Amino acid sequence: MAQKESCSKSRCWLIGLVAALLFLPVVLNGWPQVFKNWGVCSRVSSHLKNSDAAFAEGDYGLAMAEANRARQLEPQNAAAQNRVSRARIFLLGWNPEGLANMDIGELKADIAIVEKAFAADKATVTAFKGMLAYAQAARDEADKHFNAALALDGNNGLAHFGLAVALLNQREIDQNLVEHLKVALEARPNQADLHVFMGNTMQTLGDLKAAEEAYAKATAIRANTVWLTKLARVQMMQNEAEKAVLSAQKALMADENNQAAWLILGQSFLAGKKHQEAIGALQHALSMQENQDVLFNLGLAYNSAQLYSEALPVFNRMVQAGNRDPVVMSELAIALEGTNNVPEAVKIYTALVQMTHPQPESPQGMALAQIVERAKNRLAALQGGGQ
Image (cartoon, rainbow, N blue to C red; front, top):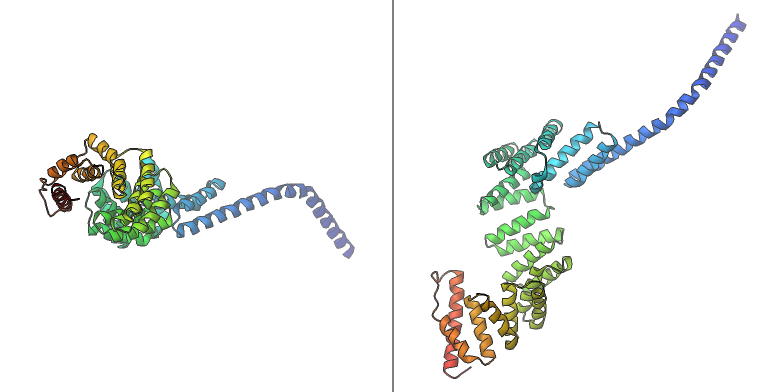
C-alpha cells in the first residue's frame, strides 16, 4: 500500500514537472510585459507626484505639464486627466489673456471634471466661471460668479483678482481696486505681473512710493525690461536719480534696444548733473527713433551743459515740427541767448510772459507760472543790459 502511494506521489510530481516545463516559455515570455507595465505605472506615479508638488507651489504650468506626461503614458488614467483640468483652470484663471485662444467647450468640460474631483476648489472654480464669462463680455454674469465665489470663501484670491480686473476695465481705479489686489497678491505673492498691476494702479492714484515698491517686487521676481523701465520712471518722478540710473541700466541689460530705458537713463543722468553721460544716453535713444521726448531732453542736456550751439538746432527742429509748448519755447530762448541771438530770444520771452493758464492752481498752471516768471526775469536782465 505504501509503495502504491509512493508511486502515485512520484507520478504526480513528474506530471507537475512536465507541465511546468511545458508552460515555462509562456511564463518567461510574459515577464518582459510585466516589467514594462510596472515601469509605466512607476513613471505615471512619479509624474502625478510631481504635478501635485508643482500645484502646491503655485506653478500651474508645470503642474499641467507633469499631469500631461502621465496622461500620455496612460491615456485612460482619470487621476491624470483630473489634474490636467485643474491645473489648466488655475493657470488660465490667473492669466486670463490666454482664454481668448481656448475652446470654450473644452474649458467647460474642465470645469465639470474639477467640480467633481476636487470639491475643495469649488470657490476657485466658481471664480474661474466668472473669468470665462468676462472673457465673453458677459460682465453681469461674471460679477455674479465672483460674488458667489466670495460667498464660499471671502479670501478667494482669484475672485478678488477678477473683480480688480473688472474695475480696471471700467476705469474705476480707486481704493476698492487696491483692496481686491491686496487679497489677490496674498494668494499669489510670486506672480510678478500682479505686482505690476498693483504698481500701475498706485502710480495712477499718485502714490509713487507704493508704485515703486510694487515694481521693485515684480522686477525682483523677473527682470523684465518694460517693468524695470517703469521702476526707473517712478524713481525719477521722486527725484531718486541714482536709483533710477541703476534701474534703467538693468532694463538695458535685459534689452539694449529699449529706447524708453535709454531716455530714462539720460534723464536720470541729467537730474544727477552728469551732463556728458546724459548726452550720450540721449543721443543713443535718438539714433534709434526720433521723437519729441528724446529731442527735448537732449536739447535740455545740451543747454544744461552750456552747449548752446548744439541745443539750438534740436529745439528748432521741434518748433519746425509744430511743437510750440511753452517749455520748449523757453529752452529755445535759452539756446538763442547762449548763441548771442538775443533779439530772437527777447521775442520769445515777450510772448511767454503774456501766457496764462485757465487753471493756475493745477500742476500745469503752476509749471507755466514758473516759465513765465523766468521769462520776466530774463527780459528784465536783457533789456536792462545785464546778463
